[in-house]
Image (cartoon, rainbow, N blue to C red; front, top):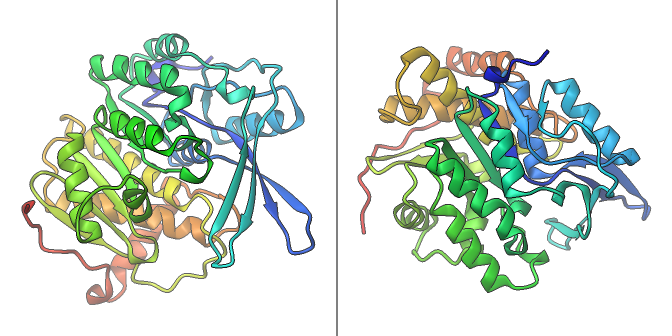
Length: 343
């Protein structure tokens, strides 16, 4: 029997099938969705993780369910629903960037309510963090995810929002942008990429200025800014720290890299709290932020060296971090000097 106190994080958002276009015109189906990948990545790092959305009884839904179960995820709704699984058709633009088309009307993972998710969260006494983002930020689902986040915030749980935006498939871009910004005001932790900042139309002459602005306007305590091969930043009200992978990587694809990064960051935060016994986001000084970044960046580095989304375990990440530290220290990822926010 599952121990409800073992759940530390609850995730809410899409679980879908990526239909990846091939040069011969056919498509390869892959289990995916940003929140689904994050959920698996958390569980694989040993974090007790609860997935709140239902899954379909169709063939794809059964495969999505089995993968979650195999990775040790707790399912808030273990019984399948009759609605079909969401689909994303993925191709590449002439510039090599992924191009998405989503099929999400009447699908399984959208058969969820704010009340149902709130009740599911209340059943887990050890729950500390709730996390959402990506397609759950669609303004058309505002009556689901927004009141749920408000309730979790009121309960004192740490709210994490991954501003993993999909503007190309949102019918009303201004409404989408306004809704995402509203969701971010409830967040204690925000993850955002350089592209996300542009889609949100955040002002500032550089990506770091834009990240600073978002941290200040959202009210979050911690903001993670990912820059792909250029590494990542952690920003707080007290300082900013940067880390990038120093070792050459054999990159097979980048599917799930950002989700693995966020999972690594949250797993490291929980591990630190287990040792200190203090509040989750307390005392985020430079040394701590660099340790958190090292674990998060290593989580992404290991993911991109696998075909598809294969998130690493906690032990694999620690071995990677320790292996880097054992190599020549000057070549280790570079940390910026902490700086106070500037206007």
